[in-house]
Picture 1 (cartoon, rainbow over the protein chains, first blue to last red):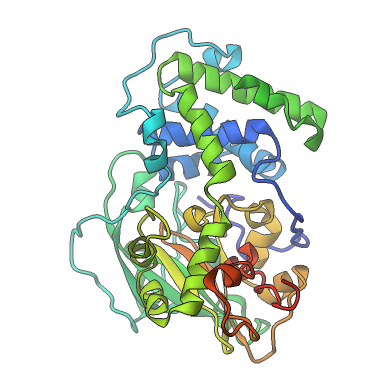
Picture 2 (cartoon, each protein chain N blue to C red; picture 1 turned 90 degrees about the horizontal axis):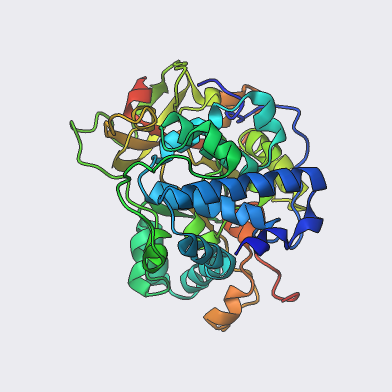
Length: 218
Length: 209
């Protein structure tokens, strides 16, 4: 979706302000928010693309004015209701009023260390890869109302396939919660001038990780 | 466990803290009562992110690559496999990619769409990495972003920005500082900052270490 989350190249957000000696968490609730989200994704309640889509679907003003972990909390509340795992009354009251649904698994203490390792998103291919490194490609000018990982700034532009990264879960499909619809994934390299015009930093090159359905031959 | 929520009150605006504190506590209670989560596991996850996962892991990988050319080649070929094979870490998820800085090219990592970051080797991302200023400007004004970090690169060093738009994850292999000949891996690792592995900083000057 063409949402506020798609920030690459936007102006007006000001300087980057690193915080010296930043703590891992700024408040204990942030740590709990991270952990309950991790435990629910481990349980198979939702996949990573559904969770990203739920953050993108927050209203733009809420997105811009909420801290990272507040967005995670709002996202979790919305996903629980949307997926029928809890209802609004339970979330408001802070207590379960109905039995839970069966999930794939439950994260117990013994499995926490293994749960910290990212899973693999590689999947068997449905067809041979269409492109090889060195091919010139043009990103499609697409504007789906649902989740996509093709950023706006890189749509409709010509780049070069730099690497083939394997065949991966396709976020645009997985976010809908139905099929993983695996697709070939490439690193596509663009000249700065191609994306930003003649005013671009002369030496700048930018790459995105692009799924095959985002690309056509150029 | 719940008293942990109160520990860091002074870091936040009071009204937002109490709202978020209550909201997250309510969520955690509902999820536990419905049988979806085990509160004991929640505490262990938090402890791991506070004490075990962090940029010290990435720093050891970089120091090894600076010291061992064979490892460096393996790291650049397949970072996930190379790090596990070395025994530096028990497990590394798939699709980790290390990119090498050279005098000719400086690499910078961003995720313009959300905040994708190589948690396993660098820990949880800092607030600035997740912020709108960084996510918006890294792709079209990387030298300006570097200036915000107090870093100025030579004009003839090209800049390459990697936007993490899929489940591949990137870390930068910074250049080994001059004047570190004969240093042990342990000593070298003290020069490797988190920001140098994101590409918004450089390793520490050995004279300052």
